[in-house]
Image (cartoon, rainbow, N blue to C red; front, side, top):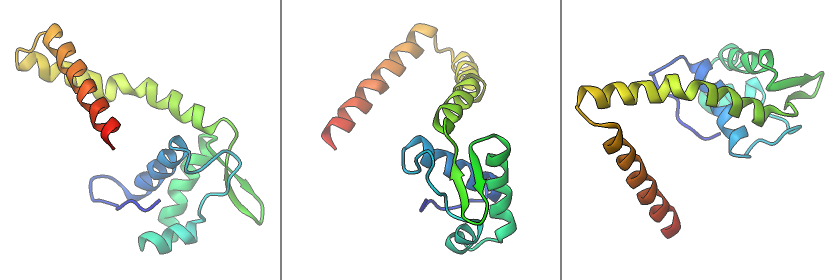
Length: 130
């Protein structure tokens, strides 16, 4: 959780998304304790209430749960739940805009598919080098 906060969206949403990313990347595992609101506040120099707002959103979604007197923990099935939610939003968040922009630029579906395939090959080669 050493990411840098920015001004693009609310800080509490960034905290929520950072925790989700750490769960997806297996940095935070199911049944593992997550940083407390005070730890997050100190790490990012933010108000503890702001950190708590991000944490509470994850509790409402069933991603985190509280062990009284101990702290917040990653719920069983949290990773699968985050992946499911993000997959459901993927089309609206990314594909619709991509298709719209491609259409406005006169890029055919075939050309778009080739671009994606080429980008995938480039990404694959880059990851194999590193």
